[in-house]
Image (tube, rainbow, N blue to C red):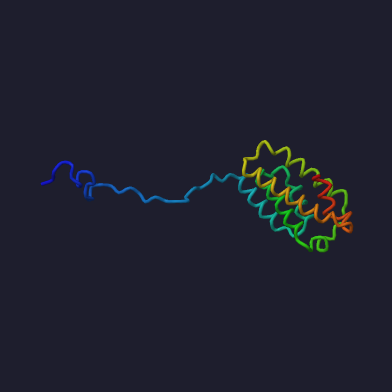
Length: 159
């Protein structure tokens, strides 16, 4: 005999005819992949595989119409990382041609035109990458022997 208010009234025993709820799955978010997001993922992979500043800028410029705000932030981050490597001046052997300058101008213009489309996280990542470039190039250009270098080019572009 069960009395009302007993524990078995509140928590009924598991009978075979009661259904169990499915287990809770964590981190099972599946974003809606579209051709555009898949294409941006491939573009991102191409960008981070670039070993030189010139190659990175060329890939970004060639796919400018397909660069999402997040991928654009990744371009600047990758350029920041390449600039911060001590050997980038030697390994890239840049002839600072007008084409590289123009491509960087177009990329910066594209970035500033995209700012309204950035979510706060992407905007912060873009700003951080640009600030890292400014910091790296400011330190490098304070040394007079780097005038005319890729550091000087980025410094002049951003400041």
